[in-house]
Amino acid sequence: DAGTFVPHAPADPSYPEEICSYFEKKMNVRKAAHCVADALEGVETPMPQDTEAATRAHDTASAIYLSIRVVIWALVLFSFFEKPLWCLREEAVHAAFRCADDPHYPTFNVPYAPRWFSFGFELACLAALLYDLRLHYV
Image (cartoon, rainbow, N blue to C red; front, top):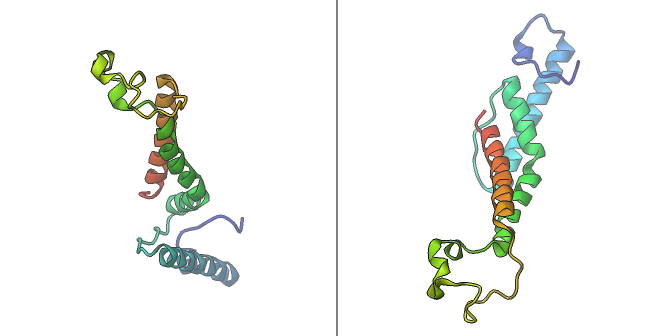
């Protein structure tokens, strides 16, 4: 299969010249794309290793790049619909700490998400972020 990555194929004399040339070109394109991405982001990151697992991880991380950005923004935006932590403490039952009952506390009548939904949503988002982080260290 021409799409399968074979590590160090160009150095192997058993491969025909056109396949060696294909793998060399494929790796050169990957390296060039990596350098362009670094230049656009203004950072310098290490090149992915020349192994099949690292190549798959790099391809997967590239494929989910936009999805991860959406997850980050979803976490930021969700904080507007999450009840503040200081309102959930035991002290919140005392009159001085009641967030919803205080007319000076600006709630803007925003519907707060239930605690179980907040926990599940944040857990799913953090799992996606941890998966993305894992892909960068393969």
